[in-house]
Length: 378
Image (cartoon, rainbow, N blue to C red; front, side):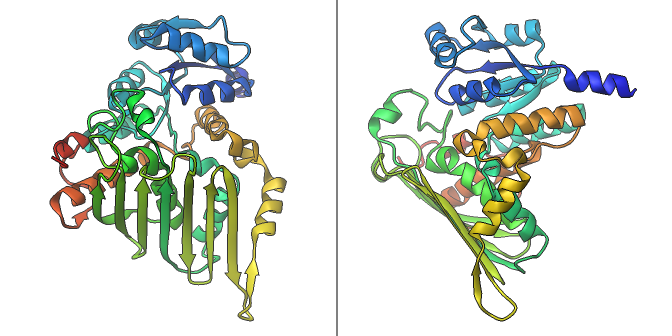
């Protein structure tokens, strides 16, 4: 038995990437850094997109290209299917892949409806196959260490948290693909640009959302969905979370920040035009304030692991490493199938609250989809 386990651990996990757009290059770079993964094929209906992707990273020029994802899955029978297509196609591909025995690396959001997200989560539970969600912020350095300390009560009771994602996109971005900014295939600033941060904030605060209240607006961008959204979540532990997400800001000035406030400490982490910043404080027993940035930086260097500083440059490296270990050791990935379902349920609860004009309870009892928002701004 031990020999079989060793051989399984040493065998390479095979991967196919379905969708050769922008984010797929990050997948390719991550795979190129990991010795236990082997890219067997890429899939795209546009052969030029596949050619561009394979030429973007050295060593993949001769990788097989498919135009039909079902044919690729049936012929290759990969260990991992990486889904990087527009969000509206996630459900059908994820379901087919899992029904044919593949684990998943699934970009956010998991699906565009609550019922579909629940079905994918339950399929993972039933089959034992692993799903790693592309919730990249969970894989940034220091984040996991801080979460452990919050969960262990080092900072006392969590009172509230805040996030803003001011990720400006101009009309050229939305015009670059017909599906961008649509309710059917993409959603707006909250579903597309802000879901990472919402997932991270809830994860850090250590409790599931039980209520959402929100408003959305279309202020500048000529899209079907919102370019600005604001929401408040109440978590099961009583803490509150405040959310702002927008693409109606300066495109060259991308900014994102999340903060968590506790009884005996607080932390803020974020990016401003690509430059990271970090501030972590605690209250010592003598009442004085102590900054803990250096403590966590040193601890991160010492522990390394999945949350290495290389993952800050490409968090998908951490996701692939984590998923590989999850498959081999039969454990849950850090951003697992439930995280995918929960984040979709929370986002769609936010949309439902905005549509109906009142708070809504979470998790949602009835199905709700982004298509239910069609015509909201008409």
